Length: 215
Image (cartoon, rainbow, N blue to C red; front, top):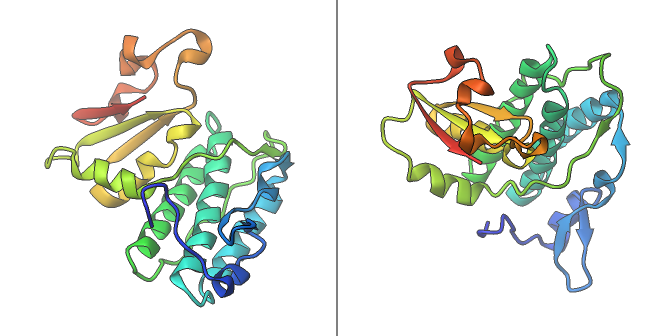
């Protein structure tokens, strides 16, 4: 996988995940477009994630498995973002943690762990609108994490908005840190993380001894 989060797929490998990739005329592939339009029913997203996991175990290559795992974490990322502020948020976040960890395991050439948590269905939500694709570039993320201080376990990683939703789960898997992802960067309401105490956004009792803020 290169620094843009891309990796080559052979025709055979792409054939395993042809419903998830877009075939370019030059023979390259990218994420399929169909998922990124409109809204999706919560039940449909939960069902898709279960189906992707079942296909993961029968994939003939690590590359095809990575594509399947990538779509799983995209789904759980959208669902987790939609559940912020609801009592089902922590449940959804467990799914995101699992899916990010599973993708990193595949990226490291390890066997993926089993799926322990199914996506929540909350009657307070209708269909979930898909967010603009967030660049889940885990290669760069891992390089960043290697630059963090050695005594990191009591550090809380703070990220803002959907664009940073995968950073915290990756840090939790790789470094064992806790994390919080804020719904917005603050700029939506004329606010800004740089000019506010974190206690304005997060319960101070949930913040570790030190923080790393990525805005």
